[in-house]
Image 1 (cartoon, rainbow, N blue to C red):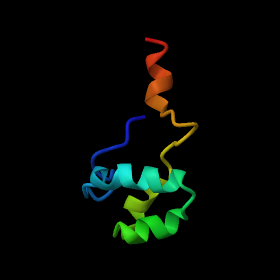
Image 2: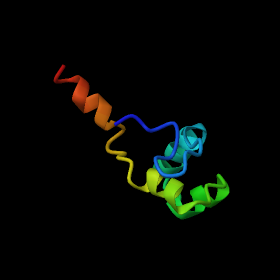
Image 3: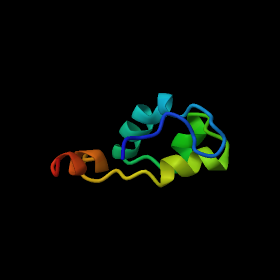
Length: 68
């Protein structure tokens, strides 16, 4: 799935910090510290990052496109 632009619960814009979150996560940083540094404070927004799939540099969208 493509990362959402807004949080599904509160509607806050969250996509603007996704690339930095993804990069720092791949560098081995703690997700909690990354979200704190990026000032993602609401638990509903944090959930959007925690539940998004990051697997071998492929997103779910990449897998779906193969079956088009």
